[in-house]
Amino acid sequence: MVGCMAVMAREGWTDEQLDKAFGRIDGDLRELRVEMRKGFEQIDKRFGEMDKRFDQIDKRFEQVDKRFEQVDKRFEQVDKRFEAFDFRFDAVQRNMFIGLVTINATLIGGLLALHP
Image 1: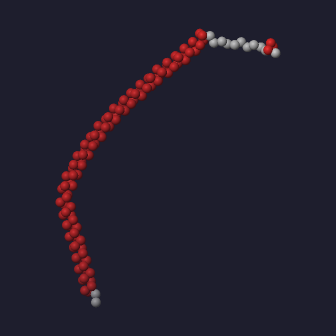
Image 2: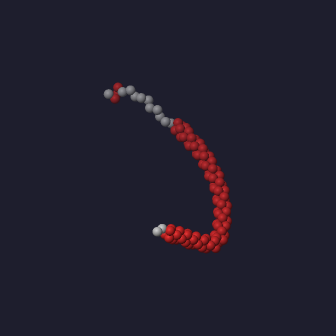
Image 3: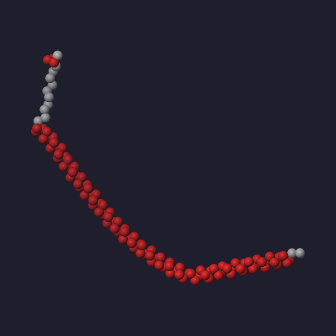
């Protein structure tokens, strides 16, 4: 039975064929590495630009913080000016309350006096 079977020719890989195949693969890998390096260099440049922008933003926030410090100082000055006003305002409120109570008591007393 073995004698009846057709024998297929077997292709053999020679050292030259293997070297060519691996050479192609090696070349492709080298090209990919070069492309990847270029891509990473572009990414690094973009991150560098972003860092510069963040530095600018940080400087702007520092300026805003300084402005808020100035605003806080102004509010402190205004608050000091109105401390005396608060005492006067309390006195005005107290006098108005006493006046309203007096007027209401007078009106109620007058109405009760008129009623038989």
